[in-house]
Length: 150
Image 1 (cartoon, rainbow, N blue to C red):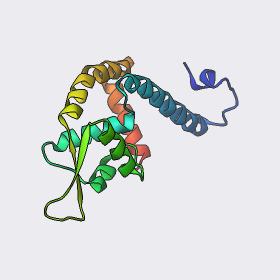
Image 2 (image 1 turned 60 degrees about the horizontal axis):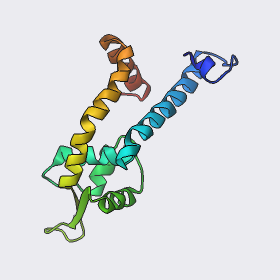
Image 3 (image 1 turned 90 degrees about the vertical axis):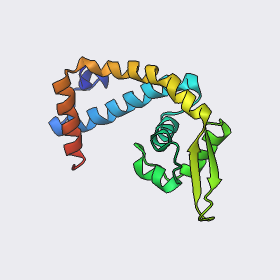
Image 4 (image 1 turned 30 degrees about the horizontal axis):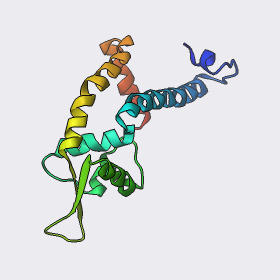
């Protein structure tokens, strides 16, 4: 469906306004799909991202500053996000033995098991992107990188 049909308008000024609206609309569409995807598992897309970051470093810990620096969706209150994951027993937080002022965050066995359960669900969701050819997906990814100045 074209963006004009999706938002029921014919009044987009030019291709740049159309692109601007389309990126925002598509971003919100993806966020809604991800919300629905993770809801049955009791986590959010942001929590999933943190679990993946921690799994990538496993069995080593991560500090909250590192987590923030590599998150897909940057947020200032990673501490609260980690607290929610601790409540769900998906991560644990410990004071660093060599530097008592530093906090270390580890993924738990339950966190690893949840990610393992989610693998096929996320993979199936990524299949929705296959309406694009491999070359189109690569080109779109390249264009998005270019928009961000990379």
